[in-house]
Image (cartoon, rainbow over all chains, first blue to last red; front, side):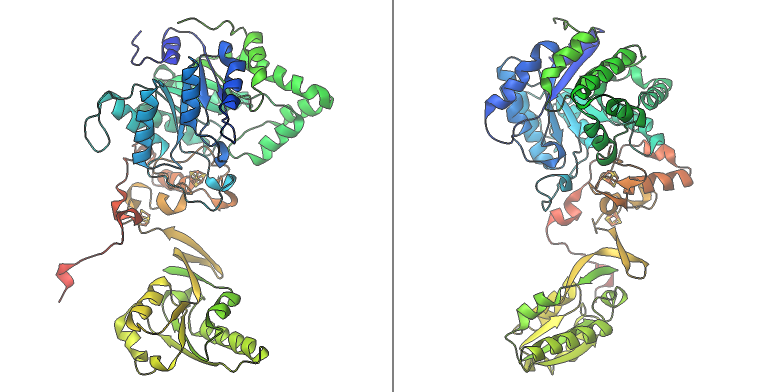
Length: 309
Length: 222
Ligand code: SF4
Ligand code: SF4
């Protein structure tokens, strides 16, 4: 087991366990309890907790501060960082800030366009892209240097992740794009929410064919649907989301008050199927504003208790 | 070319309402092609303003003139003899022309009559789209001749992002995803292997980020 960082997530994955991560969105305010409460709900059922970085471009408490709150609780945060809002100075500086609190995981993203959020008239930065952010943090960690070439005293020691969306277009570049992220230095992948399991399987097959599943840990992204309405919204409104008609029908086919439970059941069934899929190394359960359901999903899929490392 | 769009007439009225004598100054280059600031548009704006001020009971003298170029001193000199008589000039040139005119006629207020939008081309009559952001270090050789800086909403050099859907960008179902276009071109050129080469971090110092830019060419200086 060639572990490179102090990350617990890395150790679990390299020990051959199926990993479980989840995510918490920071509050739209400065109350630290909001993020701590969410983390409390899931902490015993997951190996790491992603903190989103102003997701859908809606201004919130920053990801870094939220991660620090979690770290101070003794938990394992995964710092999400988007390249939309910060240039290379700010990104490197935040990476060091995170490392100073011994935050050992990071997820490199480009971020949703600001037109989705509450600051539609704002500028975006995009000084570097997510691929280059992966390279940046690996360079800082492995070479111990800033992008400018100077030495870093006590370099950051992060396990480096990125997202992959097998359902976005064009499909034919989705595996090459994964290969590119691996070449850039990514070590784990959390995928977009998977509803179309056949398409995901096809993507995994192509990734396996190129040997990519041997080079990176792929955590399958899962988001339980709360209602048929949510399924329809995700299908029609969220870019890059693939929600099959059968799933919408199945949810719509049960009475409204039972749809949430049906959504959890669908998620559990999907995880059961994906557990058997070669190359899937864990699950990233994004129960959006529904964190209390994560323990049930983890327990029902036989992923509980979590390994002690 | 530089693509501009008309400013709402109310905005122009607001700037010139206290004047008695103004010149509407067009430009015969880009803004003529994009039908925002050529001779024809100078005439239309002048008539509309005359009508407006007549209705307001105000007698305003509005002259029209269109120069070959407003980004060239030689042509700007053509109004040297008459410029002084105006209380203001409304320039329908791009932002470059407006500023160059202001620099030449230091004591006369110059107001922009158009919004300068981008560097683009005419796709069809009445439709202009962006093609370049003048980043100063052109990468088109590596991206199949399609510009990721101006045609990707996040100017990703290693796109496409996860929001690309059916050829369209995540920000609008009416906007082509620049990276889908790049991939299509790389496929047509049989250069998909190039897709997997990671594009290194870009030097943006030749872009807006580096401050006001300059091109100095000693070989052509006299
Ligand atoms: S790469 Fe730069 S110079 Fe080339 S077309 Fe794009 S913005 Fe213009
Ligand atoms: S959808 Fe395409 S054009 Fe839009 S931001 Fe993503 S890669 Fe760029």
